[in-house]
Image (cartoon, rainbow, N blue to C red; front, side, top):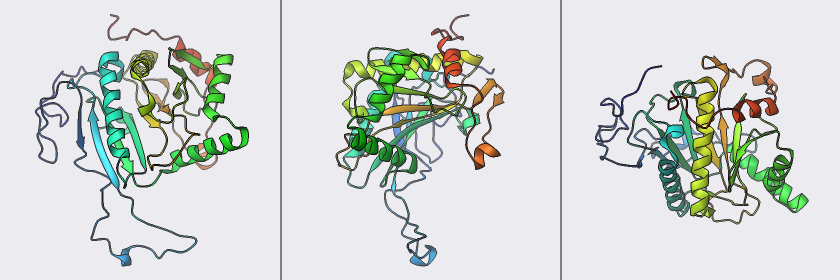
Length: 313
């Protein structure tokens, strides 16, 4: 594997470098956030979209533009690091920035949902190895969080208890899909996982969003993310690719007692650093098929060292 430099003069995310839009990054020492130079969402609908370009609305086909804000978060000035190798203290700063951004964006009347996520690795479409993630804040609630919202609300209404609190209690009792836990969080392979080494990070305490974490819980989340990232990298001794995202309650000002925030990790690797799982054929057209059981995946990840393979030589 190629060794990355600490600072890459051609990287548009490194401190002091020029971005694609012509802006110059500050010489940041910890984290840095900016509005995406090629944002997929804009705070207002483009004025040049005419009604003639939109299909007529009826009870079957409805189309309308989505508005919002896209931001990029640089985790560190170091070009050669990743979430797994940042260390707990520096990941805690990333979490603090997530919370600051969530609080700011949630206070806007035009924002109804805030999606924090990271695509890691070229196989996941990430063209820049500099450690970074994104925030897309939208007017409406996107499809997958909306599905989770519906299921969690329905469970609370039917059973009188939080769905994920109940699920977490069952997983902790069984233990077979739990990878590890600390004082505040549990890392596990979900029962319904369909990516080979899919995982979730769940807070032990019922919390609707990351803003409800206290200082100790933020440190524990940083610890859980670093430990999971290290185990992932050690699995095939490579910079393990994944898409990670935080699902939490909508920011529409409503009451959402059913929401229990959590982190999803969707990694594509199957048997080695070069063998990727593809969702094709039956899996694309009918339903996903597991290549190994959730319990077997948990064992594989659980048995990995907490010392990163690049630091143990």
